Image (cartoon, rainbow, N blue to C red; front, top):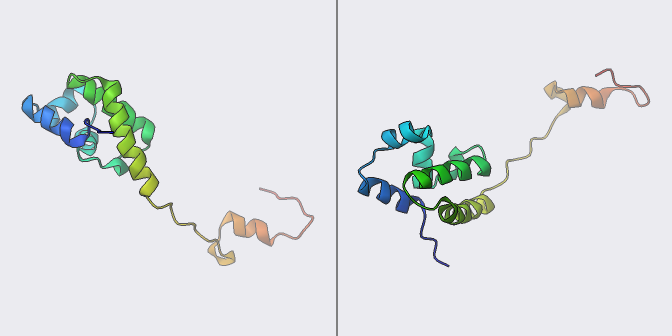
Length: 115
């Protein structure tokens, strides 16, 4: 399956239309940071898939494309990126770090928590 509508395609189309990122940003109210993130497929710039999809559809529509078609291709790329990223490291809690968990672990058994 060919994924035609990728970030580079959107960038090339924007340039063919002689549109700057600033102008598209002003007209769509999407920051240039996110628009460039879509074009460069820097998915880590977005707070989540929902925001990425929403901005990508709006951008595609602004460029005169079918937002649903573009969303399918870009969502595929997003999913591939998401499946490859490593999960956040698990932080171990030690008794001496002053955390609430440590304090709860130190209370005598049978006593109710006051937290």
